[in-house]
Length: 218
Image 1: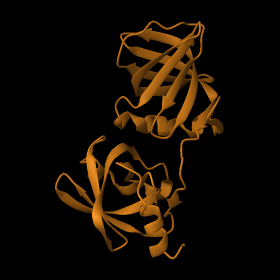
Image 2: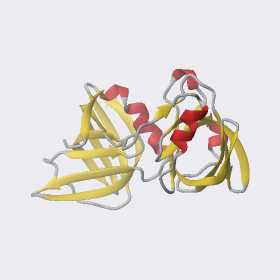
Image 3: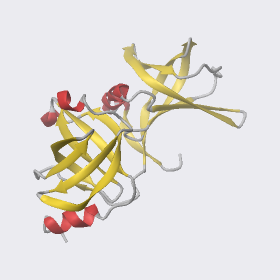
Image 4: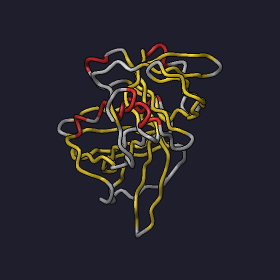
């Protein structure tokens, strides 16, 4: 599949699929029948193991008539994860899929990304007229992500505007505008109780270069 690479086994990515539940409508479901591709929006409902199979339940935004003999693809947009499924059951916009064990990841990053896994870099943000300070998780010239406690993350909403005011103690000459594209629970054991929020810049930014200079990386 073009622009996708094998990523591992299903069990490694079920947590990511489950975390997508907080981002309603973040799943893309499609099926190609006789050369015609139909794409639908949906949300994760639940999953469970049935003997040697994994069954995933998806709630779709619209009704659709599926071909029972053709594969159905499920794309989780936040992490770029592609699942392949087999039709099991469908009624009242609720689709039940038997998911294949092979999982694929979309090669979606078009710019270098710098991660701060072992550094404590703080950034100051403005959201809904309030100022916050959070730990910077990673950054590129297209956007960045932050790490924060679940309880605080509940106050943030996907698609809402957010402004970046300062980085690593350096006030920016002008706030850099962006919008929230995803909110998910951190998959890492050492970040238990934390969420990750992804923010996309309104336009490309030289922030990556600025941070690299401040950290002595360029």
